[in-house]
Length: 86
View (tube, rainbow, N blue to C red):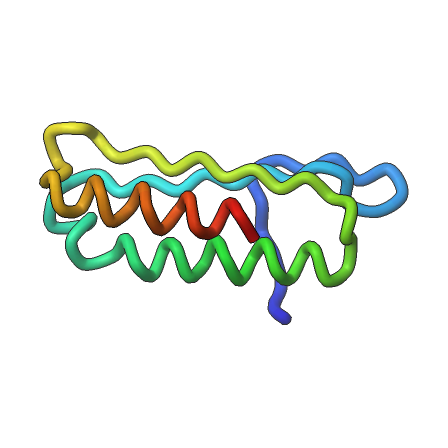
């Protein structure tokens, strides 16, 4: 679907493991960018799994706790849980 740039990948004969980290560093960034970040995660996972269906893809989403409102915290967790069930 599009080129992938991961932080770490293990690919002896096709992707077996890919890791990418995303960071939202402040309340303003979280408010403006978290939904785009989730869309990027879903696109990256779909792209890799379309080529390598047995690959394990891990994402770490790091947001400093003081930067999260309760509303954003719940929305982000619910969205990531829904994405993980894919």
